[in-house]
Image (cartoon, rainbow, N blue to C red; front, side):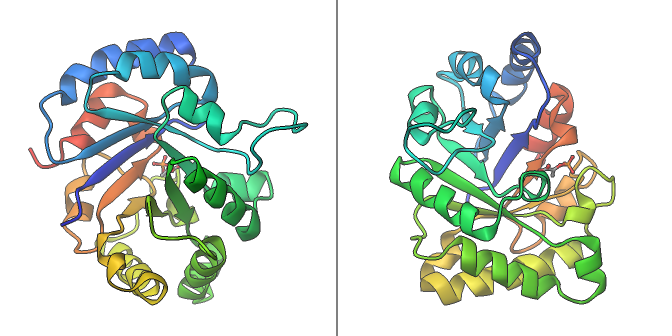
Length: 247
Ligand code: PEP
């Protein structure tokens, strides 16, 4: 039985003050929600404030990135121990925006996953194809390559996969339930090849223009175990509706 998992990815949005306002509105809206793992990934600067507000709630904290070394001369980077120290339980790794704008390769993603796992962080590993790749019929090849290279020598412990077709991120174009299920089913198959029966326990999230209107249909797909939500997670009432998709 895989517990549904819904995570907000705020990207480069919200100051500390805006984080406080959001949490004050959001926490009461989900306080009675049961049977869903709820996670929020604010920017680095708001993590500590977010953690102080989320203590003793049913909401966990995620970072949006981590560096692959433990410490040293890496100006501007953040280490895994810096994240665990301020209350992060999760980290998003390999988001397509990082792959696209910051040249993150599968090899870098692999190094980041390795160190995050060493420090006990749970990992939301993002994979997904571009529109050109989908139109060229290469979707499954891309997903396979990202999974195999990203998870090389990595155990299944604390791994969550987020399937995020790049053409659906921030575009308002959601994958159809058929497209999502097809990709998730394929990913589950690849995870079986890597991890055997443990693959049945790994949560596979869908990400790409998830809203309160489409979450229920997406969650009805057999292999969709949750969602990674960008734009629609920025408003507390909207994100609460997504988290409360069962109601
Ligand atoms: C994301 O960036 O992870 C995402 C899914 O964004 P959006 O929901 O805005 O498409």
